[in-house]
Image 1 (tube, one colour):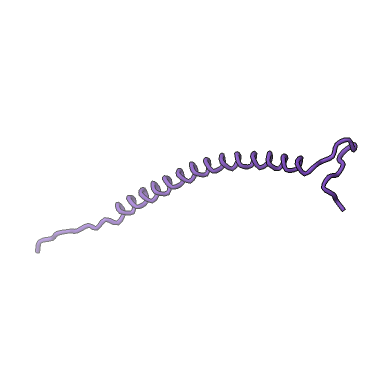
Image 2 (tube, rainbow, N blue to C red; image 1 turned 30 degrees about the horizontal axis):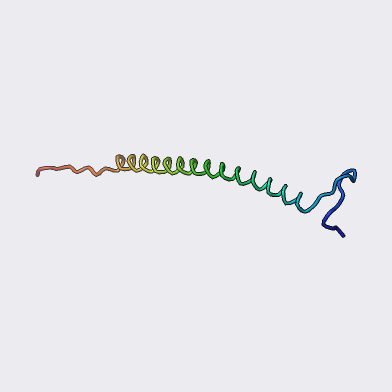
Length: 77
């Protein structure tokens, strides 16, 4: 069964709970910074997609309005 400290490698150094906690904090810090960068890129990409969707809807609606105009002919009898 594993204990709180085990010898690693050539047996000259033992890994303690503090070593593991320090390494996990270091990894967590890296993950947090990468997550912040990803949030910024996702926000920018979302804004670009929203503008593109609105622009596309406007362009298609404008085109559809031109295609189906009502033409009224006035004839005298």
